[in-house]
Length: 83
Image 1 (cartoon, rainbow, N blue to C red):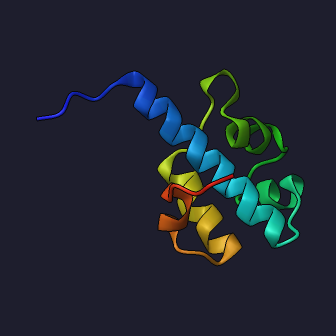
Image 2 (cartoon, rainbow, N blue to C red):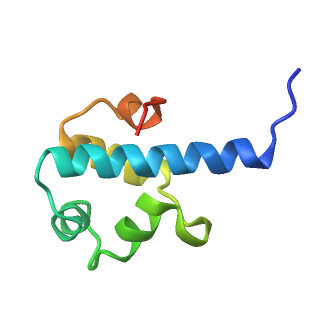
């Protein structure tokens, strides 16, 4: 059984945030528009979670809603892509 390393989890959250940002930008949707569409009142969470700033990240509910708004499969957020 492989031991989970905290650095691996950090990298996963960074990848997810990067992928959300990339897909959002490709669809010409602002952080504010995305935030409002998923029921937030400001861009705060979107902006910090896309960068994984101060270890702030999206939870599964956020990702589910974002996937619906961006019209992508939620799996797209987890893919390892070259930036």
